[in-house]
Length: 294
Ligand code: A2P
Image 1 (cartoon, rainbow, N blue to C red):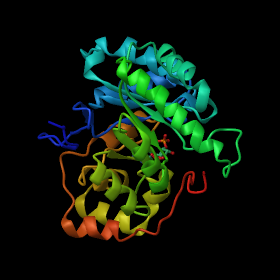
Image 2 (cartoon, protein in one colour):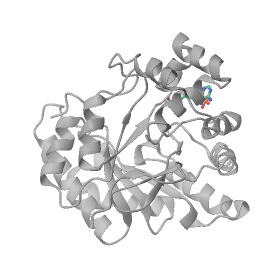
Image 3 (cartoon, rainbow, N blue to C red):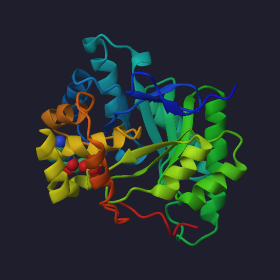
Image 4 (cartoon, protein in one colour):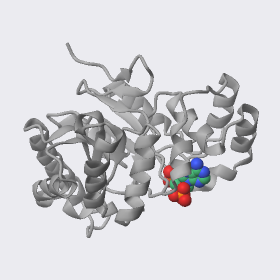
């Protein structure tokens, strides 16, 4: 029987359409650089209970993330199987370069398998956004990801920054359906159409930039909800997502904020607070807009 994407019983992970569990909270590592800083941050994350680490070829930290995990897992009494690692294909490696780039991510991380590997961006670096070759390259890249999935090197595969159009195109042509769509998601960008498509096609919808890259932390409505429940604005924004079953990837290079961002399961937002936050939607992006990529 086909396995369904759904919240698991303990509510701290989601089941992907592959049947494996993905922790609801992961450490985002964009801008995390330098081995000392990375060791400190990964150590804080493991101590705070994070079991999910999200990197990418373009973050240029796969080597250090891999080293930090190898060295720190034993300290926390953990092994490879206890954690979930995501990486992503860089936009310059779309098309015929993809197989080499997939193996490079495995080698740089020093892992025999990656839990989830995503196409990072629908376009190819160096092509104009309207160039139809973007679409041909995406299709070729996806076939390479399917190969790595079928030989067990990528336990799950998915996409990031795809719009409804890009995702529908993929769903119509793929042999292996994407397990995850990772996109910008917060109360100012609730992505209704994309979420509905993901729910319908059993693709796990995952959020990045839940804090609006930090900009939403000073939003008066967020501050009001935070005051009302005695939590920080960051916790309120992250809880708003996980309470809807949406996995989050808070980024922080600061150990105490890493800990704060992981404390999301000992409180609940009221229905009224959830609606107040969702009502802030303005279709506003703080990150990159993939809409015009052909
Ligand atoms: P820092 O690394 O100094 O903690 P997003 O995940 O929406 O892209 O936001 C990331 C930004 O938010 C980073 O600049 C990060 O800075 C900041 N940030 C992350 N967590 C918190 C927090 N709990 N409180 C305040 N700022 C935070």
